[in-house]
Image (cartoon, rainbow, N blue to C red; front, side, top):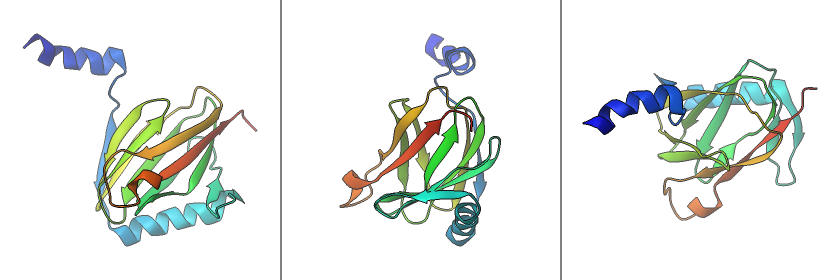
Length: 149
């Protein structure tokens, strides 16, 4: 019983759980939002052809999970707050930001929104931590955090 009531304390003070929003969506609608963001804010392509987007601080950022990839890679500014929208086109995936240890589930038909303020520069990995098939072990994405430009 004590642990049950401590959950409220840990959420508010311990910063172990983050508050998020969830909305119903369709794969086509979410994919269209993601493609529009890529077209507007793309700064370069990775060697493997993945686009890297640098949206303005304070904006809504769309991250799409689909069979064995996170799309696109993100470039965010240190100390700026972003609203990260995530959805899946196919199966349930797990969003795990390493080494920060932020974890959440990403489901098809739902758009999860988390608020993220990077505090360190560097390259961070997005790993799928929910088994999604034979290529699951290769499902990785990137978030680059840079100083303000």
